[in-house]
Structure formats: structure tokens, C-alpha cells
Length: 403
Picture 1: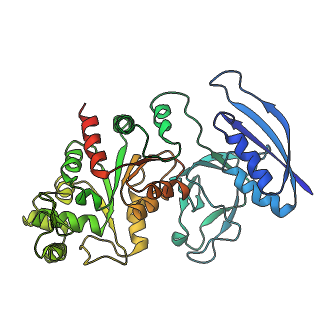
Picture 2: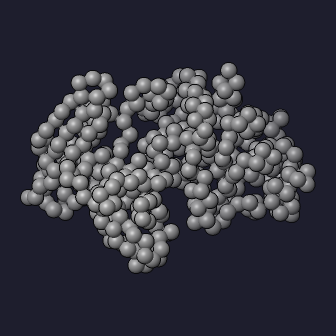
């Protein structure tokens, strides 16, 4: 049996950080002894715990990496271990796998922040700067952080007061029985705060925005500066173009709610028209698309990234079919985000959630509870979920932001 000592400080009791650390120790098959425990005397005071771990060496090594995600670190400060990558797109053995939490690394005796926290990446140090980097982007010679020494992670804590504290009331288990209007008001309140702070609001959209007849509500959000970046797939742009050109979505009239004759051809004809124009922007400029989501994004110069999939018809000329290039384009828009609202698109929501720092307030809205819970299950611990009809949500949010 070998031993290690870790310190953890912060609001570790009411944020349930300490109980989680102890659970991790027991689950790993190790033993612990709390050598020191100082409890904060007031609401705003931090607490401190020093914990001795006992176990086999390989168990302790794995455990120290896990506990670092909760902010636990050895009391003696050491610099990080840096190993140069020797193969393009391959990380050195023992690389540190990141979380999306605020992280610092100690280099030459100084703690420096890691730029753009993102889960399941590595950390590369360049001079006095450190940044996350996906495995596919590693170049030969990159200095990669390895091991668990010299890394400091700041876990999410229960907010002490203010808007963030009210917003977290939604972060309990997903349910369709929560007071919906109150939840929408809290989302609107957070959106106002984010915009007032000069940060951007990202929307991740599925085609249900079109299918549910919610185009008008969303275009109002664009026109009133509540939309700053959009991620979506081929389906949203295709059915939005179909609605603009034929008044249908999936061949069903958006005005009457009944299938139209030859309506099943409408989306492919819309696709063909935009492909002939060369791009969605060109289709707008040529008067082929005169209204809708993509029309508003183009005319208001809102950046959008359309990521493709193997099931796409067409696809639209703006759709990025190279997966790694789509990831690069999406990551380029992450800096400066303060909020992400994900609407009825499970795969794009999970992909986006994997790229977001935990500091970005994240809302996932879907009629299917499973789609909402999967986002947090995949590691986006900052996300809150709302189970409701997408059309109802967008119209209510418009109303809340109008007040």
C-alpha cells in the first residue's frame, strides 16, 4: 500500500464536492483519512480538507487524475510534465485528458490559465500560453501536458447569489412537470445578462423549428439581436428553404397542416434550386429564398455552421461534409460565448456540448426527455434541460424577451 495526500478547498460542502471525492476514493478501491478539515464559518467562506489516500500505485495514479477534476491537488506545488508529440495526430502516452472546467497549469513556477477549456482534449503549452487541443490537431513537437502534477481544476460550485443562482433551480432531474413559464423567464433573464455582458448567444437548431411552424418566432429573435451564432445540419437549411419556396415542411402545408400533392418532392426541389444558385447567400440575393431562418441569418450577417451527416440529401452547398473541418469551424465560434440554447437536435447538441466550456450557460430543449438527459450524461455538466414542444418554447421565449 502506498499513500498520497491531496488538498481541496472552496465551497466543497454545499456544492457536494467533498462527498463526490470520497465516493470516488471508495469506488476506486482505495482508503482515505481526513487529516484536516476546516469548515467555513459563514455563507461566503470557503472550506478546506486535506485527505490522505492509501492504495496500490496504479489505483492511486488513476484516482489522482479523477480527483483533479474536483479541484483536489497535492499540497506541494510542482510544475507540469511536458512531453513532445512524436507522431502527427497522436498524443504521448500518459497525456492529461481535459474536462470543460476552468483549468490552470504550473509552468516554470507560474500558474497560467488554459485557454478555451474543452472536454476530452489535451493541453499544449507554448511559451507562457496553454490551450486545449483535440487529438486530431496535434503536430509533431507539440509540448503536451502529461500526468497529474501541476494541474489545477476549478470545479463548478453552487452559486452564492444573483442570476446564476436562480438559473440553477432548473438543473435537477429532467421533467416535463416543472413550471414551464417560470423556466422560460429564467432563460430570458440569463440571455439578457449574457448580452449585457457583451457575450454571444449560440443557437443549435434542429429541423423541428420548421416542422412546428416556429419560423416566425425564431426570426423575431434574430431581428432583435438574440441570436449571434447558429450551428445546425443540412435538414434545418433544407426544410427552411422548402418552407420559403413552397410553404411546406416535409411536404405538409405549414398553413393548413395537410400533405400537399407531390409535397414529398418539395425538399429535394428546394435543395436543387439552392445548389444551382451556388450557396444560401446567393439564393437570397437572387430572390430564390425570400423569407425564413436562413434568409434572416444571411441578411443580418449572422455566422452559421452547417455540419453534414451520412444521411443528408443534396446536401446544401453550405453544408460542411468533412467532419474535422466542421469541428474546426464550430470551435472557432466558441470564444466569447456566454450562452448556448439547443433546440431539438440531439446529435448536434451533444457535439456542441462537448466543445463548450462549463462557464457557458447551456439550455437543451426537446420534446423527448432522453434527448435532454443525454447531453448532461455525455459530460456537459453545466447544461439544464427543458422537456417541451419546441414551437411553444420559442413563442414563449419571444414573449418573455418582449417584456
